[in-house]
Each structure stands twice: as C-alpha cells, then as structure tokens.
Length: 516
Image 1 (cartoon, helix red, strand yellow):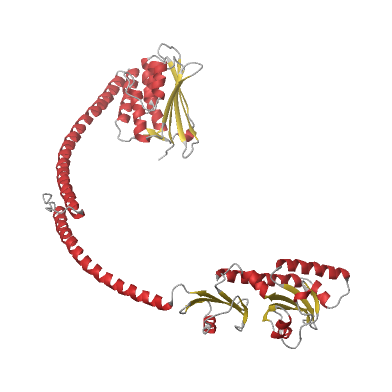
Image 2 (cartoon, helix red, strand yellow; image 1 turned 90 degrees about the vertical axis):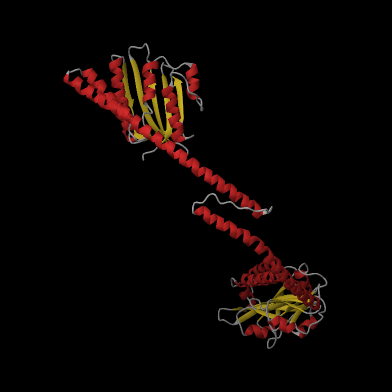
C-alpha cells in the first residue's frame, strides 16, 4: 500500500508541476486567445513537449479552448475532439480556479479509453477562462503505473472522491463491505477469506482498496487465539506453583545469611554459615564464611600494622631532632664567627644552615626562584672551597620564575658539574638556563645545567640516557634525582645528558609546566 500510494502521489504531483509549467507565463493563455504568432505557437509546442516527457507513458496532455474544442494534444488519437461546456468536466472547471480530479463521464468513456482526468482552467487577465488544460489517464496508464506494486492474485481498486471506481485490476469478490472499509480511511480489515487494506488521500482526492487472499481464515485465527489463551493461563498457574516452591527454597537460606550479615555488622566475626547445599546459595554461604575469616584476619593484621606504624612514627620524630640540632649548632657557629670576624666561616655556616633548613622543610615543591636561591647558597660554599676557580651564571627569563619543580632537584646536577666536570680546571664556567617549550597536551619546562669542563664519559652518558636506571656507586645524587622525577611525574618527565662540541657537558630535565 505504501508503494501504491507513493506512485499515485508522485504522478499527481508531477501533474501539478505540469500545470505550473504551462501557466507560469502568458504563452499558453495568448495561444488560447487566438494570437496569430508563429513564434508563440513554436514556444507552446516546446512547452507541451517538455511537459509530455515528464508524464510520458502515464497520461496524455490536451489543451481545449473556452468553447471546449481541442486545440492541441500530445496524442490526438487518445483524447476527444470536443468536450461539452454545460455538464461534465468543463462545467466543474468553470466553477473553480483550482485543479479538478474527475472520473470520466460514461459518454466519453464509450468513445475513448479515458478513465480519469485531472484538469485546470487557464484564466486570462480578466479572470475568465481562456481555455482548459486536461491530463487524461486510461486503464493502460494505471496498469503501467502500478504493475510492480501488487501480484496477480491481488485485486487493486482505485476510487474517486465520491468512491466511484476508476480502475480495477481484476474482478472483486466478497465486496459487501467495500464502502464501509473505505469510509474508515487507512486500515486493515479481515473477512473469512480476504484481507483488505484501504487508504484515502485528502490531498489528491482518490482512494485505494487492496484485496489479498487470507493465509489463514478468521475462524482459524479465533481458534488459535482461544488455544493460546488457555495454554497461557495453564502456564501461568504452573509458573505460580513452581515459583512458590523455589521462592521458599531460596528465601530461607537468604534470611539466614541476612541474619549472619547483621551479626558481622555488629562486630561478631566468629559467625559461620553451615550448609550442605551445592548450588549457588551453597557457594554463597561458603564465600560468606571465607569473607568473615579473611576480615577477621585482616583486622588482626591491621591492629599489628598500626602498632608497628606507631613505633616507626615515634622513631621518625626522634630522628627529626638531629637535623634541627645540626641547624641550631650551625647557627651558633655563624654568630661565633661573626664575633671573631671570620667572614668565610660565617658565610659557610650561614649558607649551610639555609640549605639545611630548606632541605628539612615539609614542602615537596618549590618555585624556580626558590630553587635558584638555594643553588646560589651552595655555589658560594663551593667557591670558598675551590678558591673561586669557576664562574656561575643564570640565563632564565623572569616570566618562568614561578614554575614549580621538586625541591633540591637541581643541586645534585650543579654539584656534579663542580666536582666532576670542572675537576682539574682553573677557570671553569657553569650555567643554568631554562625555557618553556610547547608540547602536545601541555607545555614543558626545560631546565639545563651545563659546564665547559672535561665532559661525561661514555658509560655515564649511557647510564643517564636510559629510561630505567640502576643505582650506581658514587652517583647517588643523580640516581635520587631520577627516582624523585619518576615518583612525581611517572612517565611525563625526561632527563638527558650530552657532551658539547666545544667541550664540557649539559644535563637537561624536562617536566610539565605547573604553577600551582
């Protein structure tokens, strides 16, 4: 039915388009009015040819003047030479300016093969009919249009707006309820032997009725409904009996398990479930027993761990007294050296105290500015030790001073440059420089420590540049740096080392940019 409706609506829609094409300018109207212009006639022939191509094989197009005489047609043999003015199609067209869907008069049908006509008046500038445009459909047109939409055993009927039959594919049987089926609009109706599908189009004023052979009679269908209902009621009763039995066999052990869980909540972990069942409830009871035993063992272990933790915490508090004692002692040395006017001892004690206080603080991250201050204190101590044999410089934009990095992460790198890189050099140069590089998901803070010393040997370079490093004797500081980066940043960090062409080495740390 959807295919039949679609094809009917499509052909009627094309008909409306043809009317628009033939009336969109005054060519047709002027021709109807008898204008003697050969170019006008040529233009009209072109318009009619184009319109006929749109509906070729389905309908013929004819033009009648105001007196009902045929002026022009796409197929002269298919249409009458004249139509009556005072009854039939032209009478209806004279009363409207819109499209008329019309079942052909019996008089016309006897003389031609036309079954159905769609027509529209052609109005001049005064609003009177200058002529008429008529589309003529015959039985072959409907058969060609709908041939692929139904099978030979079906009976397809098409009706006009008054439910008068226009087209019938084959003789209809069992037609006592046709009018009532069509009056209900679209729907499906069953009789003893046939199934009817009907549809009414309010837009194009036609109706469709499709009769199909019923696969199963209505009596058989009603008997099947009755048998199905009886079987369904019987099944429901059996389901009720079986579910009552199984619910009792399930609810009782679940209630016992619920009571046991309540005892566990109160803190009694000695409760156990005793059952001989081998099904899911039996395994659930065994799992409950296992859970209660494991929970009891876990609580006992937790108590033991808490005792050990308390003891460890106490020892930690005691060990924290030692750095504070050392810091206070250095502070005393600083003031004694000031009193004795020993400037180098004062600087050593003061800087060492500041570094120590910074190292024992509980703050894991510091800004780049704070880290550089500690590096300067450390460099002053080393300059006193090595009698100013090196120069220290910083090349860091002030815009990145607030970037965060782990505390004391740069000091081991500077220490390696002084103790190993510049060993044996009298005029060394150490530089810290940093920048922010654009990354894929986040910006990267790059901090490098370089020197112009002897460089890093090949074994040490390989050790520094591998992803997983092992503890190396004599290089605990660098190992700790790598482990701290790994703990804080997981895989989001990178550390690399290389020797410079002009002499010396550089070690670079790459970490995500963070400011809070």
